[in-house]
Length: 86
Image (cartoon, rainbow, N blue to C red; front, side):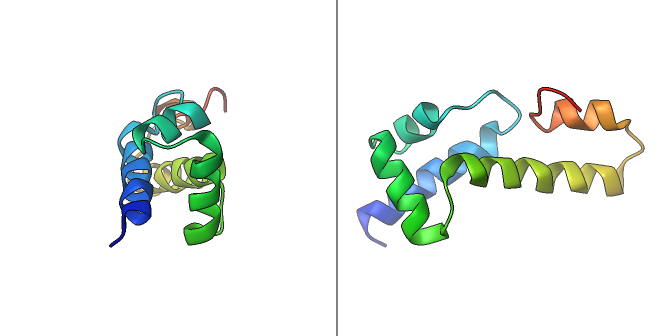
């Protein structure tokens, strides 16, 4: 695995561990130790996505799991998944 893929993995891991929090492109790129434009390029090249869209899809995926596996209210699941509002 080359260093660009390692950096992408670092950014993805940061998203997976912190998706419940408010995350910016700058936060994501900082954890990959790259510029914001490099972060955008890496996500596009390897995942055909942007970092923020990847974050949104991950949040939706986690929210969907909670909807299926718990009896929590949608507002609670929304908050637990990092969304500001329902």
